[in-house]
Image (cartoon, rainbow, N blue to C red; front, top):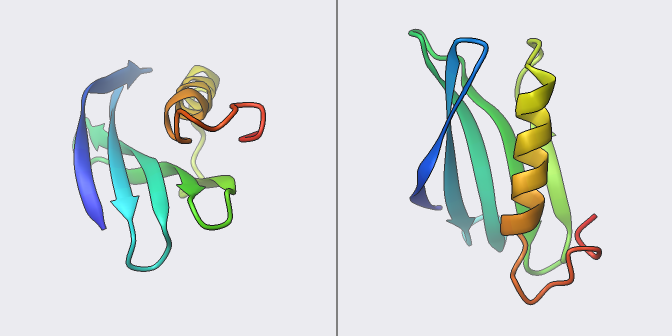
Length: 97
């Protein structure tokens, strides 16, 4: 898996800080995705979301890695921005829903 820091993707909600990281995965699946990690205040809670577009199956999926409550605005923003930026630009965004 190749990790690419998503510059300018530091978000703050309810006093917690989150970072979005873009990644490509060709080892276990073929595609590109985003991870959202809760990083502060310490200790951070680790990865909370993943959005992934699989180039082989053309499936766009979302996973939650937390059982804790999260601000609705954070969830909404992650889903909205991932929908616009994770699938390939040549893909009609209506197909990715």
